[in-house]
Image (cartoon, rainbow over all chains, first blue to last red):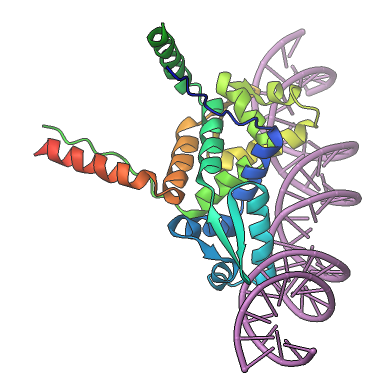
Length: 118
Length: 118
DNA sequence: TCATCATTTAGTCTATTGCCTAATTACCTT
DNA sequence: AAGGTAATTAGGCAATAGACTAAATGATGA
């Protein structure tokens, strides 16, 4: 039987910091919300805000270096898409760190997993 | 049969903003982590950091106005405790807003609940 | 090739954040 | 009432964030 290796990201404090930093801006959270529906180009995103294009571009680069969005250049357009995994993993990870409420459950779950393996 | 009313907080954008703003600082996230184990007084918290007491006090007030911690004065000490609900609700709420992945599941769950009721 | 469009980079300015020290408030003890 | 401890408030300062305009880059199409 094949054992599935779950890739566990090696995750520095800085990464977490970048994610929370990125999420601390209303504009950036709105951008993520727009991207949750569909991919958009930089221009399409900028259209939806009252601020200048360079400012939006700056926000996008903050989001990208936090790993919350990814970009791909196609022709003269740059398409941005949401990277859901990183958002979910970071927030989930943090919640578990700060809410030991869930720790007993996790322990229980680990025990269960172990007993099944044997 | 009694219908349980789930209190749904009426939640302004500002509240969310304050929470994310509060979470954007390493120091403040560390404070929350300390408080996840047990309640602590302002002084006990300050001890654990290299910055001055007034700075810690400032961080605590940011956390408190975001509703992430609550304080109670007992004698000459001020005891701080984590308010888990607000943290969980805000982060969960946000994840659901930005990750429609979970929306079909939620819909499914609602449908199930409805069918059970009938 | 040249003009145009999409986007980013560079450089500047202002407001805010986060830190500090000093002063104040509130409470407890003697 | 006085002195001491816990904590916050006040005021000041340096660094950063986030906005803008102008300029640069890179792709398209006449």
